[in-house]
Length: 272
Figure 1 (cartoon, one colour):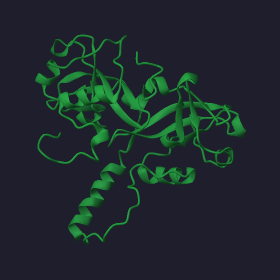
Figure 2: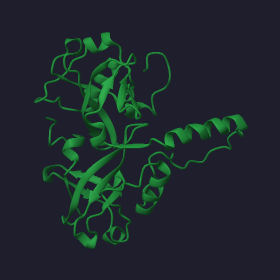
Figure 3: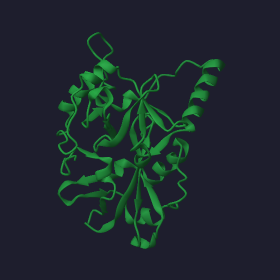
Figure 4: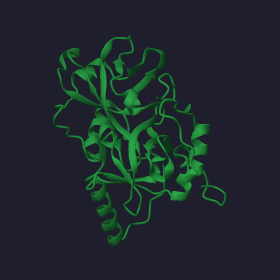
């Protein structure tokens, strides 16, 4: 199993069910689910239940990941949202999850005072050249495609079948390791069973290597067989100590750039 006391990374399975507390240590509720943005592997929001706290009942509440901070030794997350804001928050029924697109989620982020992660920070910039009608149409079509398939819960992703580009069944997704600081999937935990003689080990795979096919309930893995054959897995009962140094090695092996370097590494020979 993953290390319960890792202050930087925890699996989605470990986070689910964790207690949520206020700044004064008051027990508020718990984390019921993590919703994943399948386009970029970010935690879109955490679904929290508050029970009878402040009379919020049995509804769930979509909370920006930035509002939660791990308290390692308490096995709890501190919620940085004032009581009065929570009292007026709009929840949703456990059987009817309304937040499925960026547009819908944007209002929630704004209400809690957080900038949506998909919106760039405001900076002074020169006026951009005007787009042609064709460019605007293409961009609108891309947004529409993404709008229809923004989020999946961690529970929905866990257990999904993984295939290669030829459609061969490789294995399945066992869990997601979450970078608590960035609110991103650090890696996906895959099992391959008897495929290519990989046995019962688990493998840490960059999220970028997987492409969802929602209509088929599968993920396509874009890693050559030869690379997988030479990959170093780990035992189900002895997960590696996850840190960015180790992750960098994993990403380089599979030919992907670490997500925390995407915005600052120059595009030049020698860099991924």
